[in-house]
Image (cartoon, rainbow, N blue to C red; front, side, top):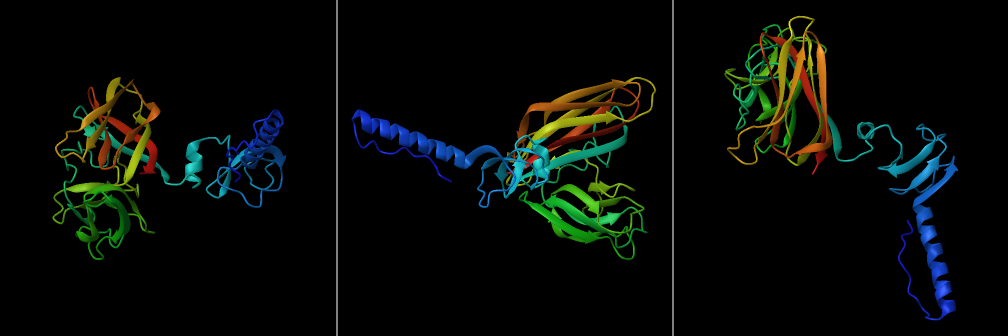
Length: 324
């Protein structure tokens, strides 16, 4: 790219100044044209450079006619529908989309976390303070040799992905993981066989489980997440649904919590409280005008409770996970 840098004025007379200004303006125009040229073209530049902007007629990119920028080896429309699409297409480096969601069908008046376990996660089982997550098992003996992918964090909060199968003879037998973990961010079945029981990970004695794949889901449903080492989560939306059929009007509270593990002893903090009041199904969503940055090693999760009775509640949050 021709980057403009001012030349040196060689003469102080009027004619020399005129020539100098004329030359400099031509060099500025050349530098701008090298980077930005909005004349419509059908043949792509043979030597594109990062940040180059051209107006393409759409015949060679499949992205339609309009101004494009050359970004990470691809021509990206400047008028793209949304940033998230380009992240999903891999055109934005060091950024990944995150969507965490959960559901619990019997949320009551006692506040609990929206996850498969149906407890207030911070107390039961509690966020592990060390690598307590060591084994996998099923609640049904028939779930033999079912392969599960486990995405978690080790004792430094670094990301670890491990794959393990349930016991080959009895699915309820706890099988040791190849990597011990202190957080589970997601699990899913990577097998042709669907489990008939709940698949869980926890300690060797199965006294506590920290994540669960509920029967039929083949993936965890947990509105909780721990930001890995070296990453920042930019959370831009939280949402929740009350999934019940029409009935008595019940108010449900949706609470977003965050917990700082970087500074030992810090209690969880409430960051957002929303409410649903309806006699049947309803939906709410809160979008942050500017994404909320959540640092590495922080837990973030959604709790819910009702004013009376029980309700079927789904909830989740979305954001961009950025490498620091």
